[in-house]
Length: 376
Ligand SMILES: *Cc1c(COP(=O)(O)O)cnc(C)c1O
Image (cartoon, rainbow, N blue to C red; front, side, top):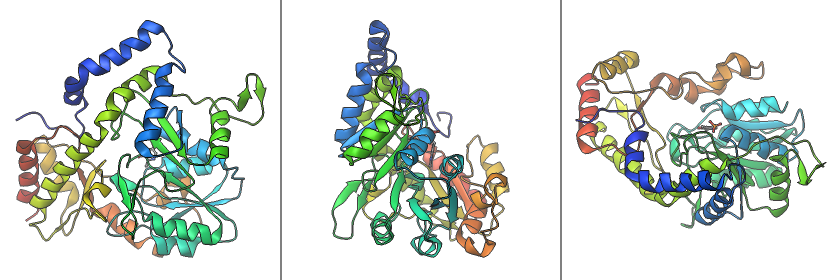
């Protein structure tokens, strides 16, 4: 059996080596390292793939979030509501911009931001909601957009983990995650569903005026060379990364299918145990692109289970072990433990199994058999 890895970028690369190398070689031959034609081509290709009017490439997913918030003109003291159960980047940029992060609990089935919790957290100071489409599945965007319209709030989708996922509305129509809110951010970190070979990110919006503002902010606030109209940053997707992404974007759908098929096999095998809760997909199967396969394990010593798997050379991980409201950097007297019953439970129960585009049936069977050996 091939060695099991949490993410197998090497095998993936071996399959696409010729296309990727040729794409990178073009940058080397033309020395257009910054803002080369590859960046513009990627922007257009991604706009078309997503059905987004504007894609603004930038240096990474954390910058993308920050620049989106800067572009919306959020001011110090404005309250921004986001999920307690996620990666810290989301809350980090809110705090960096001196906005006030307001962390709220998540839904037990999807692990995504809770609509009821958002409702309770809205105050006259609230200016924006940042749903994070966690592990590959969009949050309940229909309800979030309705709440935002009612309270005049911006919605910034953190789409770093769900690129390519289809969001299904109650009436059956579909849109890609990331083109539903006012603006969205994504990351092309190597292990993401659409990953480059270094850092990369992008912002999406359908709003022409906002797109114009964002294009200036990513480039030192310049709209005309050496005229700085607003305070900006330097955040670029470099041409070599764009070249890699141009080679990989045509494969994104098939990569997401491979992840989904691996997830379906995991769930089919693991659901025999009544101590395991497998991930829930809301909508059709294309609603979830399984950036991570995260299940819950009940009445089990989770760390002993992890050791059991590691002893068999099966990597596994906890995303995420500590709620953001309990992190030193983001603690606040505004929070009560009673406000986070779901997050507080999830951090004790979740476990992520290897998830990537190259898992084979033998590996999946070995992994699920090994879990079930321990979780009786
Ligand atoms: C990866 C990730 C980010 C940050 O992206 P970087 O490119 O690493 O800066 C932000 N939010 C979420 C939910 C992520 O998973």
